[in-house]
Each structure stands twice: as C-alpha cells, then as structure tokens.
Amino acid sequence: MRLDRFVSKCTNMGRAQATKLVRKGNVEINSSKVNNPQTKVKLESDTVKLNGELLEYKEFIYIMLNKPQGYICSTKDDKHRTILDLFPEKISLREPHSCGRLDIDTTGLVLATDNGKWSHKVTSPNKKCFKTYIVQSDTPLTKEDMQLLQEGVLLDGEDKKTLPAQIRELGECEYELKICEGKFHQVKRMFQAVNNCVLALHRSKIGNIILDNKLKPGCFRELTPYEINEFL
Image (cartoon, rainbow, N blue to C red):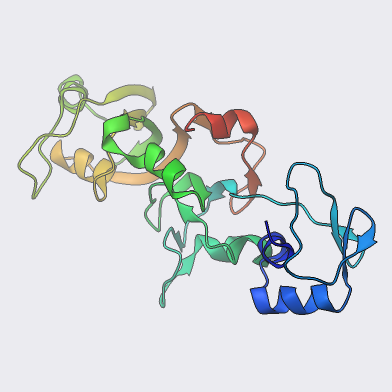
C-alpha cells in the first residue's frame, strides 16, 4: 500500500494532507524517515510512525454500541442526533453504518462497521439472524397472544404474516422476544397486532453477540476477533 494512503487510512485525514506530511519528513518506516508518498508499506511487517506515534492500520472497524434514547441510526440527519455523534472523530470520519437500525426511542445493542459485506451478513433475511429484544408492554400478554406471536402475525399494511418468533415472559408486562426479520417498527407493530402497546424496547443480542453489560448508554467498544468472526 502507498505510504500516503496508509497514513490517510490510519488517521482519517485527507490524502493531500497525508502527502504533505510525508514530504515534510514527519513519517518514519522502520525508524527511517521517508519523504516519498509513493513508498510502499508492507502491512504485515513494516512499522510506521507519524510524528513519533505508531500508526495502527485497520482495513475495517467493527463497533459495539449501547445506544441511548434520542439518537437515530442514520449517518446523517438534519433534525436528530445520530450514532456518529457518540463516536470520536477518528471513528466518525470513517462513517460506520449500523447493521440494522433501532428507532429513536429504542435502546441497546447496535453493531456498526464500514465493511458492507459484513453488515449484509448481519441484516440479510436469508441469514435468519435472530435479534433479541426486551419488551415492556402496556398490559400483560395472554397465552393466546404469545402463541400468535410465536406463529406469526399479520402487521398493519402487510400481506404476509411475520416469521415465527420466540417469546418468553420475564416478569409483569416484561418479555424477551427473538425475531429474525427487520421490518419497519416490527416489534411495536407485532404487539399492536395482538392489541397491546410497547412502552419500552431494548435490544440485548444480535445472533450470538451479546451487549456488553459494562457499556453504559452512549458508550461503545470495538468488537473482539471472536465477535467479528460470527459474521465473516
């Protein structure tokens, strides 16, 4: 990889700015100053420093976020804060996108990446990746309601029933719901289909990736290699 592209990728600065820094002698490869932006960097073996600081190259980033209320999962919006506002500039400049969106008032696990192929494996209906939600309902579900949700319900405006869901009671008006679809406002519409209302919604798990209980609302961490491999 060209040195100027490497510096740009590691720092999220523009290529022109990276080229200028290389030509000024601010970059070292294996402890030797290099001022040719076209110098090739061996990703597997070379050590590159900018102004004495080691640059770490990552082709893609993979983020776990505990989304709070009041944020949307789009990368740009003129009216609402987005999840990019929760990341430092080094991450937000790469414009990671969410792998499946949560509503503005829904909290919990969001996976974000700039690897489109990886996110497709998370969201593709063909993969049948189950997402787990904790639902607080307005009134208790009856056994008949739960059976309907498990078998599939017809959402308002749809002509096909939802795929079978998994649901279990956690407490009074509190349920764990697992679905492998991502229709617009799906969980809320599913409860509406059995004449109920969702008061609070929290996503706790995507596939086998569980929201880290150490992450407070608004906080994030990078995924572990094991978690990344879940969808490679």
